[in-house]
Image 1 (cartoon, rainbow, N blue to C red):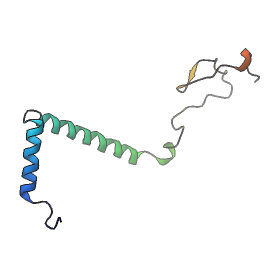
Image 2: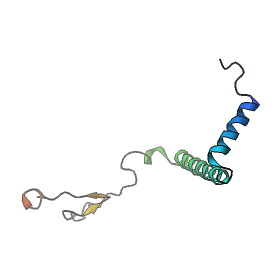
Image 3: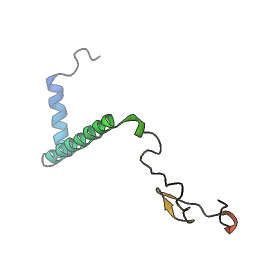
Image 4: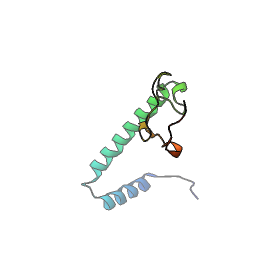
Length: 94
């Protein structure tokens, strides 16, 4: 079925269809945004490869409070997670 693969005139037909669909005015902006997206993607992949594997696990980058730190009040947000209210309205026994 595809013995010869893509030939030059196939690519030409595809380019003509793209120009008709998007218009010649929008093509430079479209190409620019695709290029920026690829640049960002490559930078993110490079950052992932350069970062050490031990910090990529769950909970990486979260700081633990010191042992003598007071407990947070109910309803406050700690590390992006709200603390639940105490059951029965009584403070927990520490």
